[in-house]
Length: 428
Image (cartoon, rainbow, N blue to C red; front, side, top):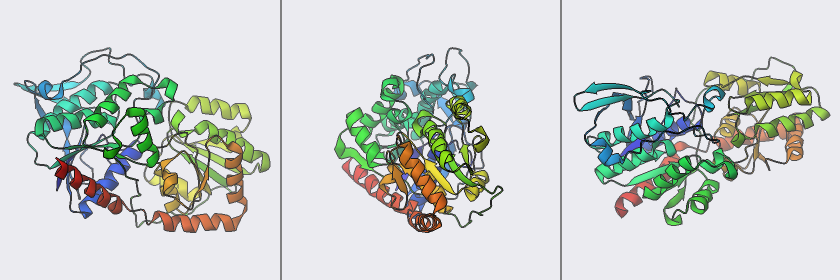
């Protein structure tokens, strides 16, 4: 079986869990005899193509005479809205991320009736325009690639998937890694993104959600037929490299690693830290990440008088994440709404006990993690304190957690996905 897959990022150049999930899933599909052509807006050339073929959308010439026919392109200019349109974005870019007031932002190479759209790496300031350009490129690619099925990851690629379906007539699977209801509170929902998400889910022949939690949102909030919505939990990419346990300070370390945004609940991490420090002042708290709530969090830490116990590392990746886990005694994920959450799996793989919110998809698959309501800072503080002060408890969660997470393999996820593919292709 051959799959034409649309994503937005791929390791080693990633801004969060989406790229990591795409890598694990495509690697798992290769084990299950599924050939994947992975399209991304901007490839750097150093991506691992051992298991897949990568197509750089910035290298594709688009025939402008026909592209809008297939994409039904919607050219719109947007001003700032109070929603996080980008799945993973730094605080410096947040407020300008969907500004399209100025024209001619994209670089274009004109070749007769054809042109190339040179996409910016990551999540640029002209993001919404690039989403529509990506759909035009997808229509072009779909006319020349051989494939049985289309797979599009998250809202940024849904229009690309729809365009490829219109050109080829092949079935479309969309993959929900997060929804607008996760990124924003219900009252601050951005209707532009919500509309694109609903458009993609409605056009799809099958919808994959990363948890039962997300599946319920898709059905209830987007009105999608339950019969075509499947739960497909994430896994963790295996590694032979052991994380070195090395401490540089005598105090115990509690770590938050993720985007500093509303969805991830960093403010609850700060309030919990205050509770723990009231019982034990000899604990250090590390907030590793970046996001639009960073200034708020820094101000709150100062207001609570715990600045000398708090450390801000900024965004981490690769070896720096391993180094951080190697220093950590407890990992905390207090997410308000987490479709899945891969970072606890990575922490457990490094033998770090984890405390996670019940409002996360990963809580559905883990047994050896302490689960609390995100808002219950007293329960979270008690869990952290217990793991820090009772060695037998900490060792139990570290050892059993490592064993459990090593059994969560992408090849098993991919095997289930392949059955969804087969059912969808046969249905068509």
